Length: 120
Image (cartoon, helix red, strand yellow):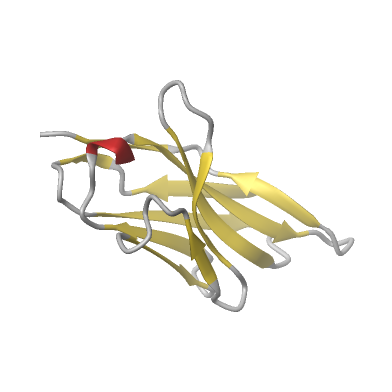
């Protein structure tokens, strides 16, 4: 079984910063892409940032220039640094990791979510 443990959420003032972490543990045959999504109340879950196995990244337009996604292959961890936070960044943030299966396929795994609230 693979587990994802997220940390780093909380209450932040507008203009502040935070760093989210998501660590994978268990029997892992390999990791392809790693991503962060978020879901605000009453809205659909949306992609925030993605990082491929080679380090290529892409970001939602709403966070470009304010977010940085990175990964540590040894620690099987993905990070999301968010700066200049805005109230509209308030949401539950979820990590998603593409796990390689023994059969050569890919299986997506979700973290449990961590609340980020941006408010004064």
